[in-house]
Image (tube, rainbow, N blue to C red):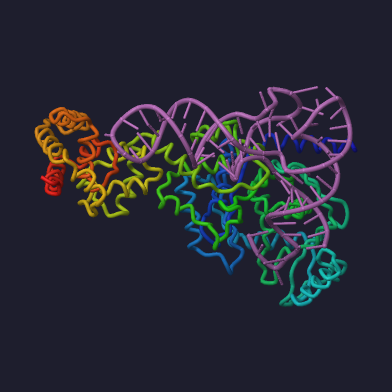
Length: 485
RNA sequence: GCUCCCUUCGUCUAGCGGCCUAGGACACCGCCCUCUCAAGGCGGGAACACGAGUUCGAACCUCGUAGGGAGCGCCA
């Protein structure tokens, strides 16, 4: 190795180390932000935050057929709900057309790219013939050797002149060393006949221009990386670090797709999940830090390192997400949870001004709900009249010999409670039980049926408390009418 | 067809040559607690894909086999 080269390498290394870390999330706006995209975004965001760098958002909208404004908005909404805020962007590729054209022209001028004029049919025939011969289909057209002139032709494209020999080696931060022989690679189209750049060309130009230092993306791109590295070289740019994330599979082990299980992250909000719970779940899906399961945002940022990401695909497990969600429901401050619950209650059409405070509902239900949606459903007994009486509940607890006296005693005690609190309600029920010489079991169940029409609810003191005194007394009277006495 | 990647309990994972008769978590089962349902506590079953090799010693290293995945576009 020559001395000059050695010095340059060393300078390059220093440059790399001093350079601030810049990551990017670069979705194509062809649909909503799904779980896989969300995890990629999270890892990019975490890597940037962990290393004190910048997180850039770029919209890859060069596919004019499939890109839509609604999709852009859906992605932005998803990122926003998750709290994955970007430092720069969003940049739109369609706004950078001039730049791609200029870089492509420079490459042609430098002899590193060339014009080609085959028709699509000719290319298809070429590929078909190669396939039948059992060789890998690759461009073997005449224009690579021709340096053809620029001329008007509906089939004109610009192809990259890929090195014919040697190989490309890169160290992937999750997959390890990957070597790719150049004769596996062909002369990819950089600029299409409609003058739009192709993905592999546009990403490289963008990542160079935006000074991206770590390219973190799905592992469906590992195959593209060698050809992209060749373009970096042709452009004389330094190579960023690459980290290719394994994919997320459905619970059945099948690939997630539009028609198979892939849903928007916003669906998780609708289903009653906390953004932090989803983030925690996604962080642990494919990454770990010893045996730790629970990570605050700060811990994720402090501990995350993309080189600790697993190599293999992982299945999405709703049960574990639900467990995490309930963990946060139980452990976060009730008033913080209440804000999220209120959204759900409003979705169901409940007026929180005419019912218990959402925070009290959170306290009563967080140990028995895995999601906010479930919590809101269970809260219906406090926000609306009893809609359905469970026959089994009536016959078992209202037709029993002690039901009437228990309810009467409860009515008496609850009526004279001076200050209506969970504690005083609890005390009143205890007194009622003592008055009829029975345990809590004999009074709680009839009371529960009176309050809810069912046999299941939170602890009886909370249940009665949240119904409110006036309505509670009324509901006892209604239930009394259903007893045998 | 060709190239590249992956493979530890049902699931997510720990493990980076001896600490492993393989640890944790979710799920499951049992017991305890108990006003119902939960939550909680305690306990239980459950895995190194297979085969060679290297080594005193392999879940960890090497090579094969099998299975899975990705790519081979004027999609991204």
